[in-house]
Length: 354
Image (cartoon, rainbow, N blue to C red; front, side, top):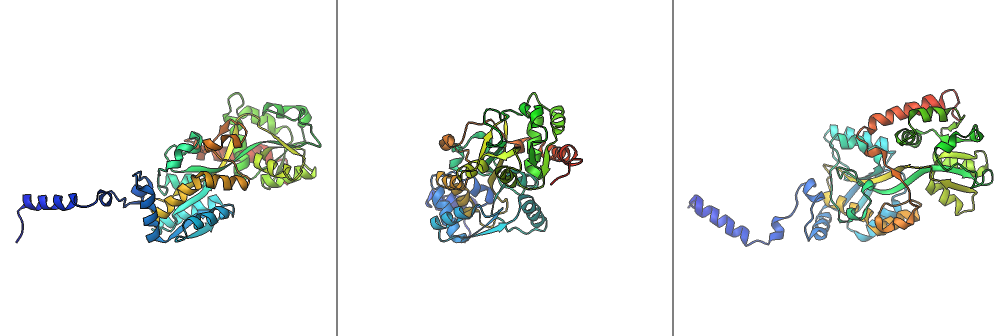
């Protein structure tokens, strides 16, 4: 016999009232899981991850491997797999997959510039993590689509056997001194060079005309990484490079190399960030990874690998710098294309990239 509507509604309510409230609050969608803040958050994520049993991370290189090894120790029931490629290639790959209705990626550990197009195409899920409060605002993408987990800072590196620390240029303006003409070199590869030019353009008091003047200093462009240019400084082939990463200098100095580094003003941040896929097949596991990579434990592992952190409780770990996160600019994609053209027009063509 069918109950009258009012009685049926009452019976339904009575059954729901008798159920544990936590069962009603269980997040179901990727968005709900990525932003769940209940007191039982850790349990919810672990219980869900146990059922999922797997995690696929799109990343670059092998730097993340020690962190994945530790993550597996914490959550041995998860089979964590890595799909590795350069950041731009990963962006193209996931865009093609989503266009075809194929959803494989759970999380990303990529340079921010590789996350821009996926963000614009709705492939990234904004998320909330308890550890986000421990990070500098500049490390958190304004829409909460990613948070920086490791950083590098580009400044002026020099060979201390060829240039004394007192003589070395200390600002971008110092690079215009005639004594540096023909003595500088840069890595002309994509992001490093483009962000270097972009920093000088957007820095107050410099601008495009300054960059044009600097191009007249006969700076040698090398089509190699900034790490390779640092090695050329160590060997003495290059005396000075304004596209040098502080982490490279620190690592080399620890081994006795004659290198030093100056922050010439605002320094561009080259970061690698963690993000979650909007249609992640294993969202609980993805959020466990996010929380882990943002933890102080993981940040200390990154530091052992030579990277810096924006965690506020590790602030004394790196020098006080005026950081410039260019990828946060709303016009960054268009700006990047312009800056890349300027690198080619002003610093590569007519000088011969090596």
